[in-house]
Length: 122
Length: 239
Image 1 (cartoon, each protein chain N blue to C red):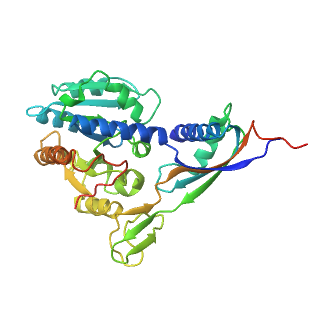
Image 2: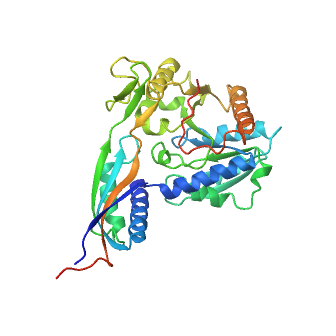
Image 3: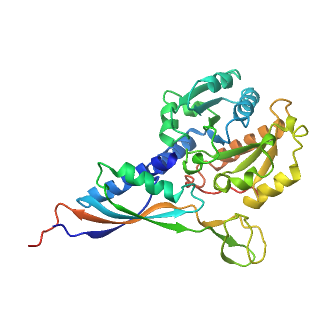
């Protein structure tokens, strides 16, 4: 299942970013996953929880933002969102639209972290 | 009690692979070697087409190949019958090739002595989509035996491919393959992509395929040094 490989990479990116900030715990992670990225959301969620064990991401909440496919229509001169049937032509005028603007994303957007060098209250 | 804070990351999940692929792409460019990554479902004819391709190209060029499989080195042996050097990457359980696996497989080869390097990916129409291997060309094979609507079923992979090869054309009549429908479907899901029809068995379409590869090598060499390194993920739609 390659979502596990993707989850492991995601955790590597997150732990590296957290460590650079002196944080040892990731509380929440927000990712943008395009519908044409080749990654299934549910499988990624499951794999993330599994792969996070023993890392700074253990117990972290994973929020996934689905990114739809949008293409540039050369005739309408604008971005159009494609329905899931993946016919790559403009839903307005029917012109073929090879230029993909969004939908292939596989990225970590932001994280909520907690550091061991934060000052404590009490 | 620690105070949580928000950190903007904005990093690609496959950053490590992408960065390595970028470095490999730059090295391939410096070495002047043209690299093609062949993807398809298992049993589509990648090895047969690649063996045919290597056999033809080796007459005038220096060529080599690496091939990924979960088990056996059968494909590397078959590719080597062309006279080219071929190495097997055994992935054990991993269903696709990643940049580090390809890099490791090239150890000891003098890339600057090569004109063409072919990478035959693990047979899989899903997972190879996400992994950039530093290639110049991603070739997607659809055999006639798998039906005309296959391209519609795998929009993710086809939208990372640069060219489609419809393989096993010697069986097209036997399976009642509707070429017009197949081509329409391909254009529906990847407008403008160039399509070749080949049979490694009969040689149909192989001349055109070899010429296409030759032109790409020439174009790469002509461009070398004039526009700088290629960017990762840049689409190359044939017009």
